[in-house]
Image 1 (spheres, rainbow, N blue to C red):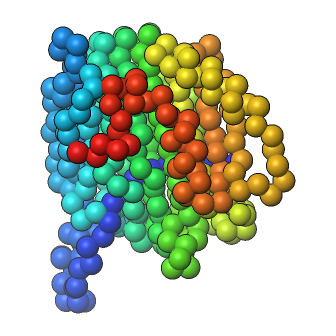
Image 2 (image 1 turned 90 degrees about the vertical axis):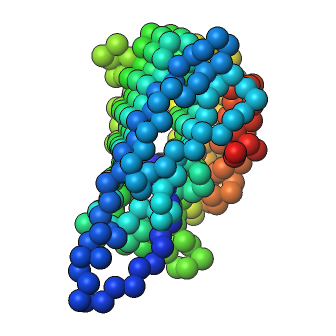
Length: 296
């Protein structure tokens, strides 16, 4: 299978002539950072810190469950040339946090490249669900992403990544220039997963390499809060037959004693999202409310 990742946003066109280089540099080079902290207070989790610097924004909708939710957004709606976004978060002992994005992540033409970074620490007994919307890299995009998550003993993690082919209707199917994503999940200094995905037409034309598939996805489940879901999904996905020329290909791989990695490639983004949402159908009961229908 190929790779997966994220970013997100859209682009507000800017009119600038050759006599306005300063405006163009300002538009195409932005650095945004965010700092998040979640704490348990009684039976609920609260957002104790939510600081963001433009172009990043943080939305903290209320919900009916015990977990706290945060959605990331971006002024301008997308990553453009030179953008660098970073998010740092802590989930304290016993807290439960959902981090997602407000709509699909869009990465626009970026000759110099753009990047995003996530650094997270999840304390004992805590849960982090990091389930952003899909990443869409448009023609000419260069995007690099890194995710580094430190899990304490008894901490749990749900992570989802989806990458789509881009604006296929505009003739931009797998038309980006470079896509790289690294994922590192550690517990007590030991790597549970340490991988890097790379999609670059320098290694061969991407539409030909990816064939009929227009979307790639990864779901990662780690920790004791996910024991029953992990067992059920390992049995369900592991028993699926591999059908030649199928529009959906899935796999399940154990990750140590309490982890599971699910991979999926689909001929359409819609089919892939239906599949990953089915896999994560346990999430509303785990959080106490349904994040798929409550976008706050």
